Length: 178
Image (cartoon, rainbow, N blue to C red):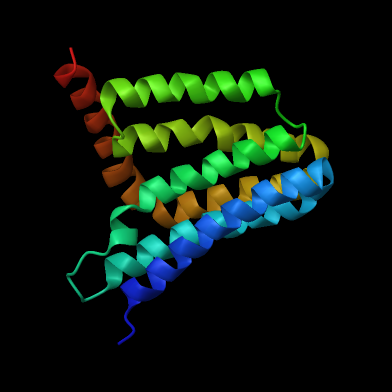
């Protein structure tokens, strides 16, 4: 039987697949694929917006493996994006390698905490948006518009749930590890 969690899981799995597509585009088309990768990222972000919304609206209380690992899939997509930028020549190997090493050390020290996984994605996406604004301004502004639109629609949840829980989680990690 189909319910909204099944659809949410399908969307989440599709986002992971799109991450692999981005790597392939970086390897095969390089920087020329940027006008394709930007809409792919907007599609991934849209999927993240809708899969969470669908999963929360489900009347079925069961948890799913994919739903329980949504943030890890988010992280996988951001790593795929970083690899796209590396293979496309949009980010230096030194920058990407040091970024991955830094986060590997942080994850080793603190574990694969949801809050840290969310935080680790942010610079990758910000760098990508800046590249989009620089190289394809109309698509770059579309990414900015999309993020602002999501914030408007999710402002209450974002300001009352996501940010406070993120800050509490990071504080708890810091206090418990010292």
